[in-house]
Image (cartoon, rainbow, N blue to C red):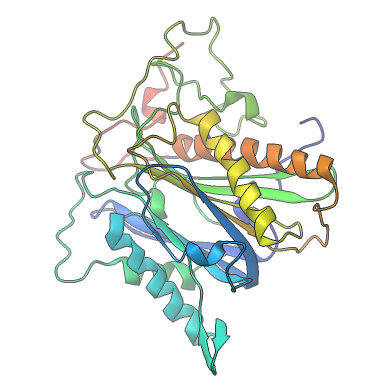
Length: 341
């Protein structure tokens, strides 16, 4: 990692060719986050959780016809949150974006959702859920700079021991390739070691981007004891994320990048990929660097390792940035600042 450094923003938008927007409602304790690409990009997906909720993921298979997508959505709201992709489609259609079929353009917007219905937010939204409007608003306000923590898809997130959130991080490799992650952390498991505030992701931290605490010393003997959400229910949790790069890739390589990024979830959340999580990672390759890694095994291995490390950092940064709100079920990481190893 000696030759790795964060990008200028330490955000997903350090990968050229994309913008990120949020829309959320604090009373609802939910929201959506949207990634809009400047032009269609190669993408892939890997789902390792036992309870996923998705839209348009089949078209990302290497054997599928479509070669590029227009946007990606991460949303709260459980299955209701899949409506956010329709709002993004509406925004893109206004810009004449989409895959052309028989003279019609259809914006392609894969989406993944997490369960945040039972977080004490007011879900009495009437006949139609608000997520379509969230998707449109998030796409319309997408920019290079965006907030982390309790925003967008991270608004109502929780983990096994503390409030969850929306995180992002980036890494620039010595080759000049950038890889970056965006993740909404709503996991069954815990992101911290034992009952301390030391993150499992600590070995990958660059500077003090999520507190600079490092690993606990001495290391907790009970660190491996499971600390999970009480009375976990099928479909009630999920960590959903996006790993993006400016390298040139095909759809098969993009899926491999998504698989590698899942290692970052495993290194930052204990346990991860459970029957009760819907853990999913999208991968997107904008190709903006002009650098191809497909013909260099060493470079592809480094990119996969960087994807895992960057995703782990993004997880911790989302929890670190979470802020308290009325009726929260769990404390934020910052509220635990006086708890020592």
